[in-house]
Amino acid sequence: MSAKAHPDELLELAKSRDPADRERLLTGIVALCEASDDAAQGLDPAVSAIVESIFMALVVEAETDIRRRLGERLATAAWAPQALINVLALDDIEVARPIIAASPVLKDEDLIRLLVEATIEHQIEVARRPSLGAPVVEAILRQEEPAVLTALAGNETADISPDSMTHLVDASRRIAALRSPLTRHPKLTTELAERLYLWVGQSLRTALVSRFNVDTAKLDVAIAEAVRDAAGNAPPLGTTVVWEKAGEREAMEARLIDKLAAADQLRPGYLLRVLKERRLSLFQAALARLGGFHPDQVRRAVSSPDRPELLALACAAVGIDRGAFPTILALVREVNGGRPGGGADGARRAVNAFGPFSSDVAAKAFSQALATV
Image (cartoon, rainbow, N blue to C red; front, top):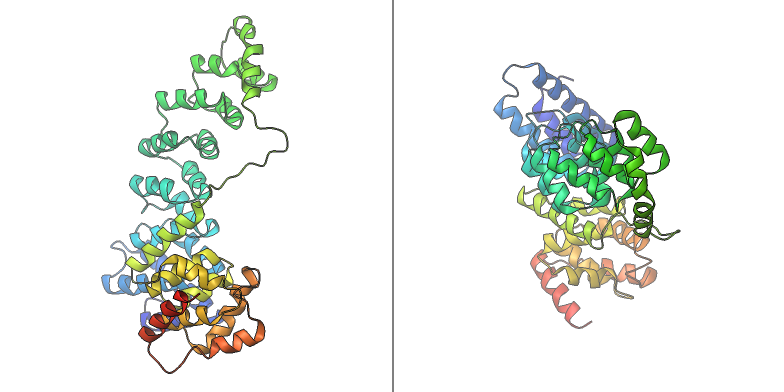
């Protein structure tokens, strides 16, 4: 199939949920990407608009594997739409990783925004990005996140100034994971090596001595005290390192919903997709945004012990079809400990909530029903 010759066919494939059609669509998009790479002037504006619509449809409705491959394909595309790239950068880390690592569309301000909006996993990928700019390095240092600092220390192509290098070495006194990559870092100076020598282990001290002309006799006098200080800052044995802050993922998901809504790409079909990926909090955030509900209203409906019809009314209010609701209810129960409860009788009762009335009526009925709970 010649993708550039059949943009209308690609649009039709984008509307299909059939796996074979998704494969054909991805093949067509790859052809467009390759054609644009070879063309001196890039994509024709009319075709570019169609491609952007297709990409956004894939991001909103396609399975993780398709989105991951899409991210890989667009990772080096300078012509990729900025809104699309920013949405992909906030997707699951498997999807976002190649985008964060290589997309030329992501500028320093976009990467700094990811450091604020995204999870620790995403922030680590930002710190690993090749040729990372000085403004982003400074933003990482300000946040003082140990795992992200460690990733930065291992990024030998980042634009790390002498002051930033000093900051990392000083931080290594309390963050043991920084020490090994800093010992090997090409921007480590003799002065900083002497400072680092005080709180590293024997093997790393040997590595520092082999690289730099340090006065080991003078430094060895201070080692015992430094080691005791470093040990005092170490977590107790058996402590589990928590990489994700409380509420961090929910906040990132809320921002992702905002970006999809701003691009007019937040559709009812997105709800089923995220449930299949077992992302209950993202489902709740999307449902609340689509229906104009307060997030707490949706959480109460999803967690109801015996009234699944509350969730049914919310789904009816955003345009979910009666025939799709049993699948949605089963998926929600699967990832939410069996709630909303009510068993098979409750499920049948919930389907009846899809009466012959408009979505506005369903929304009002939802709010009124919650008021009585």
